[in-house]
Length: 88
Image (cartoon, rainbow, N blue to C red; front, side, top):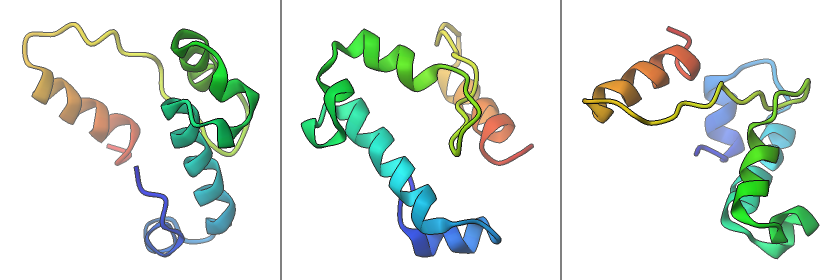
């Protein structure tokens, strides 16, 4: 995950890059169960997953959950990336 404000600035002009970097770093810490992310980081992985993937109106929008069942995971990942990240 890209969390460097300079890289974010180059890819996403017109945003508060420091704030976005902070949110993305917090997401990483929550995923890892890092206590520095607060009490939620100490929850079981399933609870953290549901919190991180819950639809919300916020700075970071997560895409719908993909179950990961497919015959060609590399192709599926490329399609998901193009659809939800690269804006294709």
